[in-house]
Length: 202
Image 1 (cartoon, helix red, strand yellow):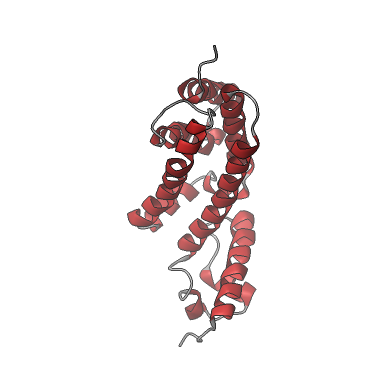
Image 2: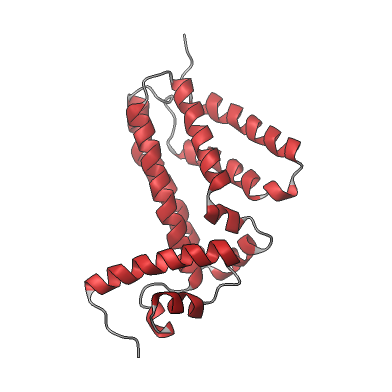
C-alpha cells in the first residue's frame, strides 16, 4: 500500500521526481526509463509514484510544461522591457523561441528516433490537448497587451500559436533534413512570422 505523505512531503517528492525525471529522460530517453528507476532515485516505492503522476509519460509532460512556463515568463519579460520597433520585438521573439526549441534538452529527447511517436501512443489525447491549451491560453492572455503596447499588429492571439506549429514541426524533424534545407525553412518561417505579426512601419 502506498505511504501517506503530508502536503510538505508531497511537494518535496514532486520536485524530486521532476528533477530525477529530467536527469533520466535526457540521459537515457523516454522509452528506456522505467518508473522503478525514478522511484529508486528519490527513495519511494513504485506504488507511491502513482500518487503524483499517472505514468512516466505524464511526468515527462509535467517537466516539459515546467520548462515551457519558464520560457513564457521570459517572453513576458522581453515584452515588458522592449523599447524598439514592433519588427524588432517580433524578430527577437521568434529567435528566442527558436533558440529555446533548438537547445532545450527535453526537446532533444522528443526528436530522438521513435520517441515522439511513442509519446503519442502512450499519452491520452486529452493530456496532449491540455498541454497545447497552455500555450494557447498564454497568447490569449498576453496578445491583447502586446497589441495595446504596439508590439504586434491587431491579430487574433490564436494566430501566434498557429504560426508556431510549423516551426515546431520543422525543429522536431531537423535530423531528417539536410542542414541547408533546415536553415532555409526556419528563415522562411521567420519571414512569415514577422510579416504576420509585426506592425508596418511608416
